[in-house]
Image 1: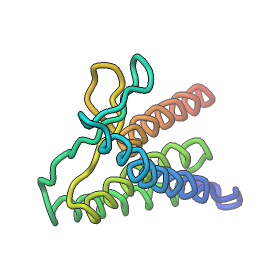
Image 2: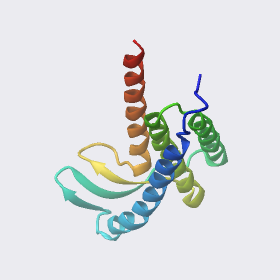
Image 3: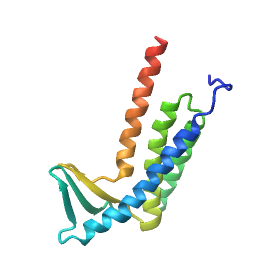
Length: 149
């Protein structure tokens, strides 16, 4: 049960989520243009880092947008009940990924991936945000479990 006298943690998650979504949009606007301006659609920055502009595809249409909205609402409900700052931040990263995907699909009808790490598939900051959120949530869950047991 959540202690009502404890300060609310949801603002941390909202700040992280909105920050990730804004960075995702701006990175695609700025870095995507650099990649598109190159002759082959990619620019190497380091041996394992390359800027690319790859259309993820627009499959799903309105149903996908509705799913993203539903998932965003579910994360916001969980965020409103976050018992610890680390859980709110982890949920904030997931929220940022959802908002980034939603804004891409709403604006362009498809998501654009701009970074390729090594030989892996291209990803966006929104994609990476999901992974970071899961790691933060798992870490927070393990810490809470150790404290109890």
